[in-house]
Image 1 (tube, rainbow, N blue to C red):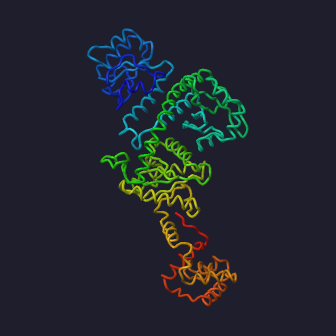
Image 2 (cartoon, rainbow, N blue to C red):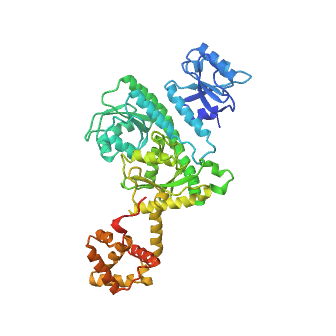
Image 3 (spheres, one colour):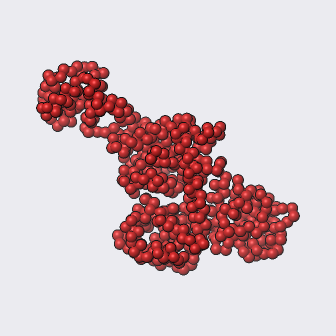
Amino acid sequence: MITVTDLVDSLGSGLLRTVVPAGNAEVHDVALAEPGDTAGRPGELVLGVGVTDRAGALALLERTAGAGAAGLVLKRPAARDAQVTRAARRPTGGPALVELQPHTSWAHVVWLLRGVIDRASAPATGALGTPGPHSDLFALADAAAEIIDAPVTVEDTQSRVLAYSARQDTTDPARVSTIVGRRVPAKTLTHFRASGVFRRLARSGDPIWTPAGPDGILPRLVIPVRAGGEWLGSIWAVVRSPVPPERVRELGEVASVLALHLLRLRAEAGIARRVSAGQLRAALREGALPDRAPGAAAALPAGPWRVVAFGSSSGGTEDVRGLLDLWESVAHRFGWHQPLLADLDGLLFGVVTEPGRSGRRGAPGVRADAGTVGWLRHVLTETRAHDPGLYAVAGCPARSPEELPRSTAEAAELHRLTGAGRLRLAHGTGLVLMEDAWDAVVVERAKAAVGPGTWQLGGPLAALRAHDEEHGTPYLTTLAAWLDHFGDPQSAAGHLRVHPNTLRYRLRKLEEAVPLDLSSPRLRLALRLQLMAMGETPAHGERPRP
């Protein structure tokens, strides 16, 4: 829980200032003062929206005190009125009196306060799933988009996308690539750099208008986000015509809130990520959180869980840190504000819940809860429309924390097979579950156990290999095709693209070179495993598929 004083201090004097403290009053929610209604409840911070004069402030203060609320937020001049401050310093105690800086919108401060209070109310500091600060940035991006009636991104000084508005229906290809990759494309950066945009952002707090550019780049309005003279980031809006000055001023108000938020984000994000990711790594490796505390499993959502390994076949997100940034952004955008993601042994893993496979593949119009397998399938379908290289592979469900390492190993195994091209991705979703690829895994495990030098153990393959190398015969390939097609000459010949009589002739010559008893099931299995280990792929050139 967080007190009024801690809440004000954490957001900084650029947003809130305590006028009259109230000891250790705790806050668990935010409430808007409704005319004629009870002003708040115990533990609530009441926002005096629309209260500007002394009489209104005194009346609201009395109602807030009577309701036992933790604090009252007012704007000047009411917040600094001498009679109001004297009334707030009542001997019997009462709500804290807090001043909201005049440049801040009430709508924006509601989102920001709710985000801070939610984070403070998380089960434990740094616990798995503690809400992150990014959700508030997305809310502010949506607010900016509403103000300017245009799609918006919030970017840091390295042109990395921190958040973007829901409205991206009128964007250009450069914006789509920016959002998918969470970074402005190099070609687009070159255009804006040549236009002097970044020099002006670094030196000034004035809005910047950029005209249309090559390759369909639409005009943009850029609002610098600065605090104490330091450039922290910027708001980029795709606009098709000049923006009225009053709208630009409103965007400046959003930028002032963003500045404080980015300062907090910069300070908190690294620590929060390290703590949460470290605990998740311990759970994936050891099956429990550090020290196996009695209540540690509560840091995970209700199970069962699946461990997921994320990857990209497009080559654009090969770095695990870049992939982590990308999936954090995707998770927040699709409503999972507490994503369980961590890098481990060079791979990006996540933990999603498995609420029951029946029905979760999705009745039409039914959306799965964020952080579930069904949700991940939906998200991959949406994101792969822009980046078809993204994929995810998931191990079998873990029904207790002790089973998480097993699910982790299975996800890593599927990821390795996919990266090596030995496991085809399902069409559409790009999600592979272990249950859908079990046959591929069994074959690959058997192949690895047999080993490429298995033909040296004995048996007929050594002689057949020597015969093929010496005489140029295709006996190994012929035998593999015959085994894959259950001894059917027509199918095996079709696979080899030869006449069935040619296949029969080869088999006769093969048996003359090396006697074989192909009536034995065990011998056929051993031969096929040896052939696969030697590089003879399954029939039709097919690879194990999910």
